[in-house]
Length: 233
Ligand code: APR
Image (cartoon, rainbow, N blue to C red; front, top):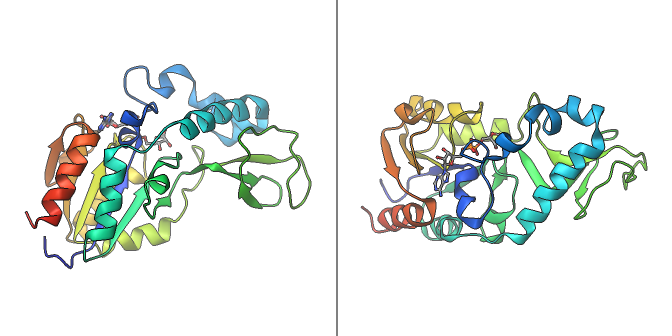
């Protein structure tokens, strides 16, 4: 890797697993405990906003109690010390990358943000949200978590497409490759000529798309990988 190269990184729930936050599709994962259709679609919110808010209130409290782990801190070190650009995109809705000091693009939204389903206003979410909360802007009781639900368009997709087109290295960390468009990012970057590497505890659904794979827990594999890049290995 030339030291002026641009690195684009995508992270998933696996990078926060060792911070105590559950993943979705591993054993006892979130989607083995709750049905996506009940809590993570616009239809679910229309049908039972209280149930949806309760689910995200629980996740918001868990995320607030969690701390960044060595993998989050290693990516901040890479952003600070790598001479070229390092763009960090996450599917995660926890704030652990920011709390580790990273600049990050949240393509699936954030637990710490709220959105008014009526007027589109966004603000910092209170710890506990309730369907009766009035929107601070239009005062209508239409507040929802600022989370991208299944069937909705992820955020920052144009900017992300550019970061996939012009990077020299694409890395995916702790993601199963089960959900598009994120699962297609590796192929997109590779088509534009990037080297690709997957860091994961196990094989993902898209491991075959990657030029290199590093297997192991993120809290040790990511710091080692970052140290290697910074040492010019
Ligand atoms: N270190 C590295 N990788 C890990 C670790 C760990 N300690 N623990 C688990 N993993 C890996 C698993 O092997 C798996 O590939 O993390 C991945 C978790 O996969 P998912 O649970 O599917 O999470 P993710 O890929 O982030 O899901 C993508 O799906 O439900 C939607 O919007 C949600 O953003 C989420 C998207």
